[in-house]
Image (cartoon, rainbow, N blue to C red; front, side, top):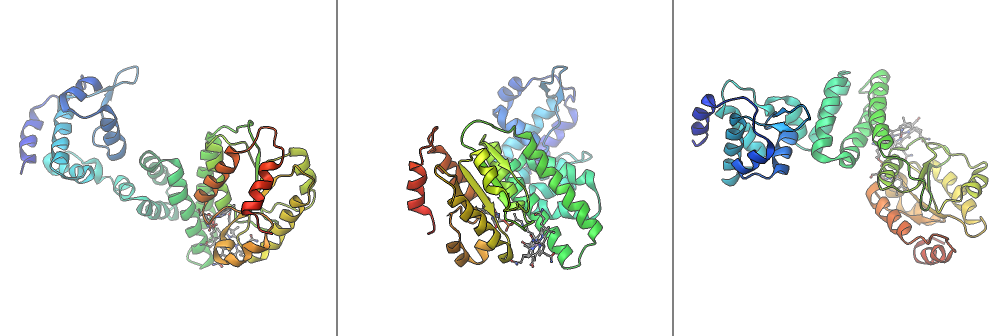
Length: 337
Ligand code: B12
């Protein structure tokens, strides 16, 4: 097989890191972005660094990159090529033999399962490393949506079904919630532009869907305030009159908490113009779509992503001194009676 050729030369090549990235781009024909992606996503190489942090590659690294490029040019995908590399370099540990990389490289679902297993063992350091890898491969929002939130829901289900102890559930849920908070906190709060206020319906403690919306809006520099779980009806209107939001978004996850959401929506609709646009969503409206017609507001869709694109569209058309005309127009187009 062709990799045996690379193996012979590999043993004789110098392992000293002396070539900068420009030299390696020229030597291999691979763009710098690909070199960095192969390193970050697949751990193809671990180049040295100069004192100022620039990557330095060895002749061995260049041989490995040429070998990988040849496999990719032959039609192999890069993760298969990297797995084969361990056979081409016996005695060297392939980065793909690290179980954390294998799981994360197998997609968000495999990452979520592996992450849950680590959390059920209270193994925080493996969980941290998996997430760091997953963020680099899939991005912060996809990991939040496809790994962190479903992992939290799964832990909740396991607890409901008695498949995990309360202590384990608390540990795992707190760990995942801390991760989501750290992503939220990394996006500075914007205070410019129309204000969007988000909160869970009175009596509702299910906040994950709304938290994802908050996270995505904050990362898009939208002026937001997150009120959290179980927002009380009392003094809500007074607070809105003081804050003057352009939009109030409320979520409900259970049939029992829809009444509170309707109460807040009705109170907002009764505010004098220019009043905020009331919008809503949540698990129960997906499970029982007929409930949507009872809410005096704009339904934002079945997922956090659909809500965010809906909200950003509404916000982008918001006049700086809003006169209420857009509000009226949107209401006539999308509001329930
Ligand atoms: C985690 C969880 C909890 C946690 C919530 C922690 C937290 N910080 O959020 C805790 C332990 C507090 C909890 C409590 C209870 N829970 Co609970 N819980 C769950 C569980 C396991 C996961 C929910 C979740 O977070 N899913 C992940 C998120 C991302 O999914 P999602 O909410 O569906 O969101 C998606 C969409 O709905 C949408 N979306 C969500 N929010 C919004 C908002 C807007 C504006 C828009 C547009 C879209 C949108 O976008 C998301 C996808 O992108 C579910 C079962 C399940 N597997 O769903 C039960 C579940 C929701 N809970 C349930 C119940 C009954 C309760 C309790 C009453 C249990 C009890 N006896 O004490 C209590 C109290 C509930 C209350 N009053 O609020 C029931 C609800 C049944 C019903 N009536 O419809 C469920 C379905 C469990 C079950 N199978 O019976 N729960």
